[in-house]
Image 1 (tube, helix red, strand yellow):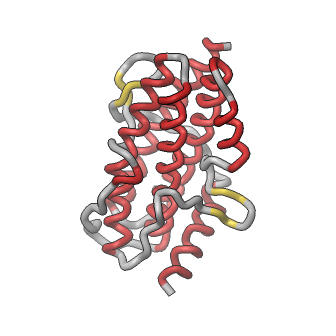
Image 2: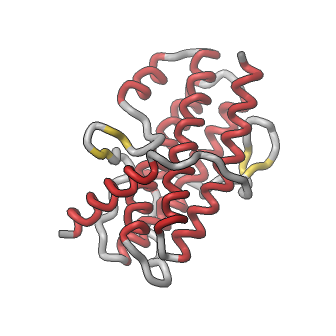
Image 3: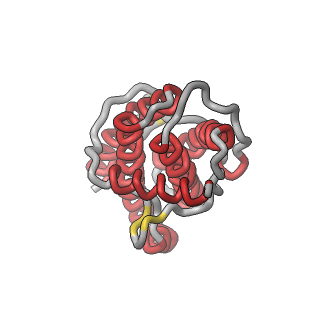
Amino acid sequence: MKRTLIAAAAGALLLTACGSDHSGASSADHEGLSGTSTSASGGGSAAAAPIGKPAAGPHNIADVSFAAGMIPHHASAVTMSDQALTKATHPKVKALAAAVKKAQSPEIATMSGWLSGWGQPVPSPTMGMQHGDRPMPGTMSAGNTGALEKATGSAFDKLWITQMITHHKGAVSLAKSELTHGQNPEAKALAQTIIDAQSKEIAQLTQALTTMK
């Protein structure tokens, strides 16, 4: 029954998020391609994230689907960042990859604690969230992962930036859906943090891609 609920919630979130706007403002701190301190969400490796404490206040199915969808979404950013830390040639790409990887673990831990406290299964960070044949917005498809693995040099740097922009837009989309439909105050606060941080990074990534062409 619990797994049925979380699957239905994830599907509902996907349908809402796919139609969402991807814009937003920024507010967090992490090293971006501009070389300035910008905001991001969290810190640490997704795979090693412990489960945090339960969320205070009431919750609804949108809160459940937000947490269940964002955990593997964050984990896909860690996978991309691991690739960049090994293969990127541009120093600022490596810097951003390190910051993105560091950013994910606390939020994964936080959302895992929420789901556990709500009596919902906690998805594995390595699990892709699918709705039919469509992945959750911004997560890495098998084709994108393969292309990134094959790319080298400046081609890798440009592809990584392009895919991270798409990834961030997906996170913003999921977070905006939570702001609209969610109930839990902690979940809505985290959603706003993600929107603020990753919207600013999208602008930085876009600028960096322009200068690299």
